[in-house]
Image (tube, rainbow, N blue to C red; front, side):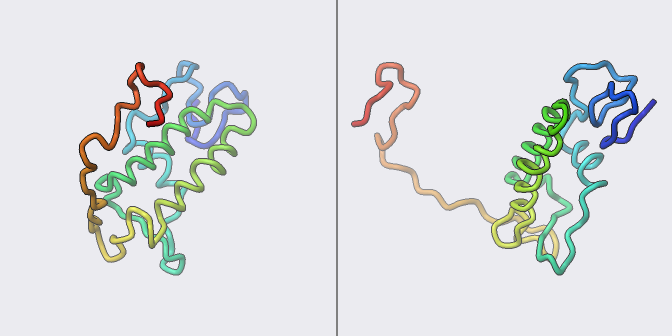
Length: 147
């Protein structure tokens, strides 16, 4: 018996997003981020309306900050789908919803320049710190050094 990614079989034996024929355990459902976005997120999340002001870029994979957030969404989904009871509710409220708002934010989100097609925003401007400004924080000789 095969189930949809967001349903459970009547016997409750397979975790969300699994099939009853799959071996039980914490085997990931999706092999990579593209598969998760294509097969899990895209079918259930609606494209933002123009009125919402939110922006999605079809070339999401070309935005490093979007990929980082989407990987966090995916990895937490893979873990929390096994949590009985409130696992998926927790995932929606504490992972998907805030990350999704940040992704689609028209002012600060990674797709903010993509309103009329894919455009990459520039990286953060950086100046190198002066030599010696930062010390090795992993140095076991100075675990509590404040100077």
